[in-house]
Amino acid sequence: MDLRQFKESIYELIVETSTNLPADVRRAILRAKAREDAGTRAALALATIVDNIRMAEENVSPICQDTGMPTFEIKCPVGANQIEMKKAIREAVAEATKNGKLRPNSVDPITGKNTGDNLGPGMPVIHFEQWEHDDIEVRLLLKGGGCENKNIQYSLPCELPGLGRANRDLDGVRKCILHAVYQAQGQGCSAGFIGVCIGGDRTTGYQAAKEQLFRPVDDVNPDPQLRELEAYIMEHANKLGIGTMGFGGQTTLLGCKITKLNRLPASFFVSVAYNCWAFRRMGVVIDAQTGKIKRWLYRDEPVPMPKGQEDLAAAGGSGTRTVVLTTPLTEEQVRDLRVGDVVILNGLVYTGRDALHKYLVDHDSPVDLRGGVIYHCGPVMVKDEAGNWQVKAAGPTTSIREEPYQADIIRKFGIRAVIGKGGMGKKTLEALKECGAVYLNAIGGAAQYYADCVEAVEGVYFLEEFGIPEAMWLLRVKNFAAVVTMDAHGNSLHEDVEKSSFEKLAELAGPVFK
Ligand code: SF4
Image (cartoon, rainbow, N blue to C red):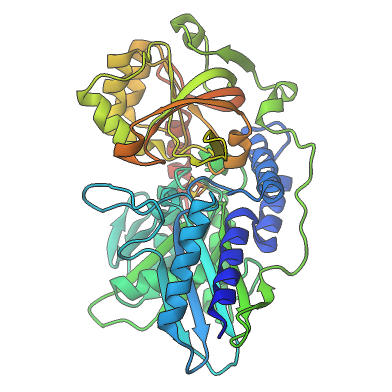
């Protein structure tokens, strides 16, 4: 095979997967948008997502800044040289990272040191399988950490909050899947897609669950029992009311695909792989001689994302209160905000993720953070030819990881707003109330939408120590729109949605499948 051409084909596959959402996923998102009432938080969030998908395609830039764990599933003819193919794939991954199509995401598990090229032990994931065809089929999934953290595995029988005992039968499986959707809330950037495996062992169960994510969204399960379960889950999970980003709404789940594997008599696992709306998976069929792409998978027809949607920044016309603020913020401005308000932010914001939060607890900040805004974001950044940093993608990351640190940091540095996604816990809520600060939920995955709000990169700290995603970037933003979901009066939309979805979950205790 022409390996140079094979590497180019893989590079093209990576770029397309990262920047161009497949047709079946686009259709599912447009259907979800059509179900929401105009002007609701869910509708505004979905409109922003639609904008973002279109911008990513136009800019050939990552849909979400968390370009995730690259997972390649490859089928190749007998005799194909898997060692050489692996080498070419690794080279293509490194090149895509250098060009800002993937964020450098591979870190040492203990020190957190970033390799800078998305390579390292276990990265990328490459699975080979032989088949009796002449061509090579390569499928790629880019699954980010926010949704990966919401994967869950159950060992039956077990007790599930709200649902009671899940026995070793189909009804027990039903309860586990409903619980999996409930526990994800908005933290995995709902509305989501789930792949499920009933049976197997702990390892094969998770792997098969993830493989289900490669099924087209609109396909039909050939197993009648699993087909019925998939339909049940789609109908009832969407009654939980978690909605897009956990804002509440009609659509919580966009797809559910279930398979089964034989198990040992002693074990009964149900494994659930949760994927966010930014469901980046694509595939190609490659000629095994020339290394050239013969055809694309998941591209049955073009599905353009419409322009002119009422997105978050345009929310003023929809009856939602919109407040325009410029940083640094005052206590009075912040205490005036209420859950549900849309804030349009201008001025300087500081990115900070896990490494920075851990650091700030014990050290001083290199900049004065009083009245400041911390943005939970690990952007994709590249230097242009003049040596200036350019933001390639800059959406919010999952905030709950900073819960152990956030309250202390708000108190210590006088922070007035924290931007992220998925919400935070009780400790942070108390600190917001005590100090006069708010939590702003940006639209998870809308990395192009928010990158477009960045007018200038005014500096960076801890780049060497923490790497690009974890460094403290000073970003000057304009028209940065986000929703107040935790205010300075002790209110939390996340708590409210969790409570109401739990009540709805409990109504589904059943039994349903005998
Ligand atoms: S859309 Fe959300 S969960 Fe998905 S990769 Fe992006 S930040 Fe992570």
